[in-house]
Image (tube, rainbow, N blue to C red; front, side, top):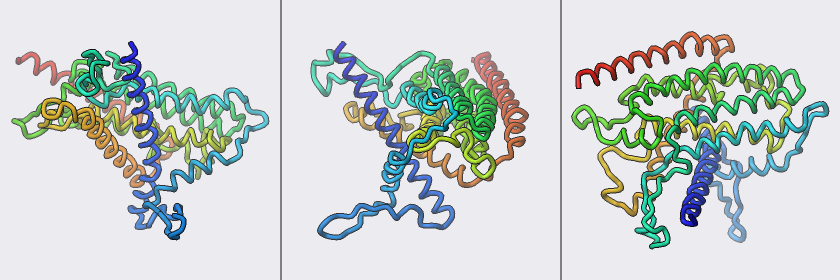
Length: 369
C-alpha cells in the first residue's frame, strides 16, 4: 500500500512539473516563434545581473516568463462591485482544474518494475507510468474537457458586464459546436484500435506497416482523422484562427474582461496548458505515444526506459505544441459567422463521413481475414 502511494505521488509530482513547466515554456516559445516569423528579435529585455562581474544574463529571453508571473502576482485583484463574488472567484479554477485532471489520464511511459532499481521495497510490483490508468480514458478526457465550458459561462455571467456576457456566450457556442466534432474525430481511432484505453492505443501503434517502411502510427493509418482532431481541438481551445471569444479588437477581452492579476493569469495559463493536453492526446492517438518506431526501449535498456519513455513522449508533445503556435501566427481570424459555419457545415459533416469510411474499411478488412 505504501509503495503504491509513493509511486502515485512521484507520478503526480512529475506530471505537474512537466505540464506546468512546459506550459510556462510555451509562453516564451510563442514570443520567440512569432518574432522569428515577423523578422524580429523577440523577448530579450528581461535579464538577471550577476553581481561583482557586472554581466547581464539574458538567456534568450527566458526570464520574461518569470517576470510575467511576478507582474501578475503583484497586480491589483479587482472584483466588480455588482459581480457575483463567489462565482466570479470560482470561474477561473473551473477552467483551469479540468486541464490538470485530463493530464492524469495520459500515459507518459510503459510498465516499469521499481524493484529492479530500488530494491525489495516494491515487492515485485509493476506500475504503468500513468496516474489514473482507466479503461475508458479517451471517453473520460472528452467528458472532462466539457467542464471548461461551465467556467467560461460563469466568468462572463458573474462579471455583470455586457461585454463579458457577450464573450462568454460566443465562447460557449463555439466550444459546444466544436466539442461535437472533437469527439467524432477521435471515434475512428477508437474503432481502429478497438479500445478506449489510452495505453492500449499506444501498444497498438507499435510495429510497422507497408513492409516496414512506415511506423504503425495513427497519423499514417488515418491522416484525415488527425487533421480533423487538431482543427477541432484548436477551436475548442479558442486559438487563432478560432479566437473570437477573446478577440480584443472586437469585444475587448471576451469573457474575462473584468479579470485582473492572477485570476486573469489562470485563464491565460489554462490556454497554454490546454495546448499541452491537445498535444498529449495527439501524441497518444496518432504518434505512437512514448515509443519510437523500430526500437524497443524496454527490451534494449530496461532500466533506462524509465527515463527514455517520458523524454521521448514530451519531445513529441513539444513539437506538436510548437506546430500549434506556428498555426496561431500564420492564419487570420475567422469572422464569427464563418467560424460557426465552418464547424457545423464543414468540419462536423467531414468527421461523420470520415467515421463512415473508416468503419466500412475496417469491416471489409475483417471480412476478408
